[in-house]
Length: 528
Image (cartoon, rainbow, N blue to C red; front, side, top):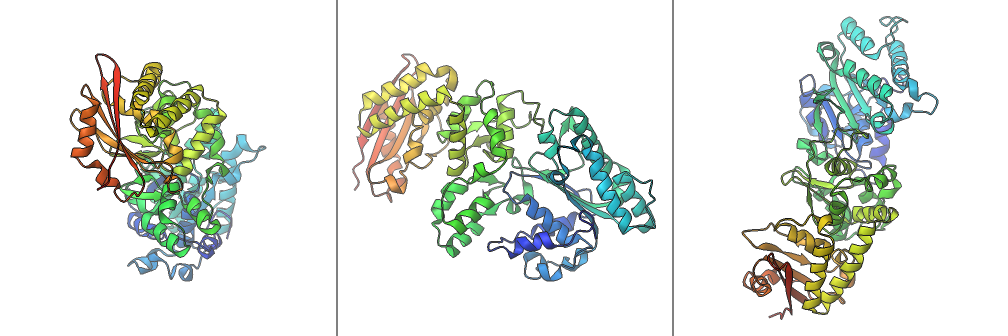
């Protein structure tokens, strides 16, 4: 048995033996259903630290003829399925990690290196079938299938590493995509391929108007379909771990939740495991290789990019067109391309129904804030300074200063925040209260209705509750601040924070389009 052909189950065994292992073998029920169908070509892209390699190792351990893994899976979810034994250890499996092949000396010949290594192992497995002159991997699989009827399962981990790391090398890009096309696309591959599973960060590379491998079903951070429960940890899984390891679940949720995949609240697995074992709430994100790639992205000179990042850091979401991104590292042409790539990297989350991007949790907020500081954004420094003053004025119940502060943001930064319609008033407020993120949870927002705007609710973090009141803010357009304040009372918005034991401030703000002036009224809420 070779390293790449019919691997053993040692890699997956280590995962199962770990102190924390969350059973994701239910995914095998899906792959068992699609084997030998047109849906048997799967590309699953997800960020680093989201269990890509463990999933690949699991598939290899389950399907590979080189394994005797019934006992390994005996206590896991897949063992209870009807077709558990039907596919267990029944296939020739080719499993490799593209990253493993990369060295400084062989990068120009990496595609040949991949093929040569795997074909040599296939020749050892089938010495009477493959002649010495067979060098191409697709040819080798086709010949074996013709002679034996055996069908292959091919699992490629980090499939996109050449797309990302060798983005400027057109020759390597074309040779690699060409290999994948020959392996997986066309009539001949349907004869020898039972299942193909690619895992990486980027979706399939786009060429011109369509994918070079458009026979693959793609599951991504933009749309994960029925794979959603198997990408990251689910809410129930994290609740169970928090109980077992005596961690505050609400705090775990605030730090590591936020990815919305097909209505599943999804958590970063490695971060959750780290906080359970170490008991330390912090950002583990910058320990990954993707962090250095993000810093230059944030400083790209695209209209609206910086303002969008600032709005999201302030707790808001921004609309993004994810269809223009070409799934590579050289074709960035707009703000939307950069934001889409950040979604694939896991630095932003994406609401598929509303088509909006947002910062998912406290861990990522800290990482993005750190990356922005490294670029010395003058915009961020100015917003932060003005925001601190606005928050202080609010806490002092200085309505006039609050109105003037918001007006200053409107006047001085109008071009940055693209203040051009009624809904943009909410962006003004979001950025205005940027500094609250240090002391408050992410603001709770509802969708705007009619000509009014739904309230913003700011709840202080537990460590600041004795010093900072909850804030309920209502916005109006071409009305009166008194109207905003009255709506807070009539619609009983404070009821949503009655469990909060500290002070509550009610803030009503109105913008007059004709005079371009803001009005503000602030009251302390009297609890009954």
